[in-house]
Image (cartoon, rainbow, N blue to C red; front, side, top):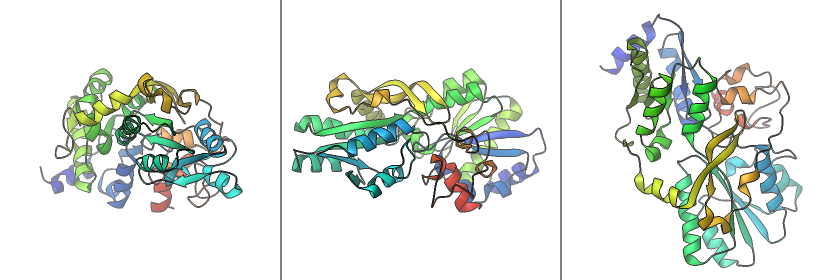
Length: 348
């Protein structure tokens, strides 16, 4: 079936209302960029899921990073999208503006190796945030540090895995009819990881690329599955995603990390969804396993509901009023992959 036939089918759909979740922030941005909502029936509602690692990072994590950055002979290394995420006493950006902290923007975790080797009297604390997409790089960096005998590196991890979060959505949001699975994460994990979810929850899970035709094809396949009652995991991104994923990347993660409970802002603690340094690399752990506290946001901030797709960002009372990318209040507005930031740039 060609793309015109797919669009014709999706535009003319007049069955029961369905709700489909795209889990990846890059998919959310692509849906806006290509105007996909204008190409499908109003009865097909697309909602965003917890696909932004920055957005689900709890306040205790930010507080811990600021604590390290305030210590003598300590430097915090972080990617730029973490700078404005609010902690209980402000963001990294605000802490840096107030002085007395050492925070540097990094562009690769491997920068820590070079800096630590050159400055053995300084401890470099790496803010390791992400999903399976970025976790292998942190794992390789830590392995290299141990092999080189570099000891003045610490990781504060907020590394999470996608499957437990999807299971949480399935358990707690029965009105989600199907899932457009994250492309980048699936490159690492493979497409087979969605088979148990599809079988257990009787919902379609379709892996898609990021072009408009990829996403439209995924929506079409989900709709056809719902029509037939098939409920299967499908991979429409075969040029990048293998059934078993990237085994080398998975193996290096398994060498360095072990699973444990993790706090997801908006969802709470999800068992086995966090990645923590195992005993063999515990000397590099910066105290990541205890970061469960999350500041309660004011009732008018609906960030938690946005993260799990209960509401669209523009349904939050603060959206575009008290919360914008220039002056973000909730974490969903901070990151380029956050739902609120994407909606603001495309809708507001």
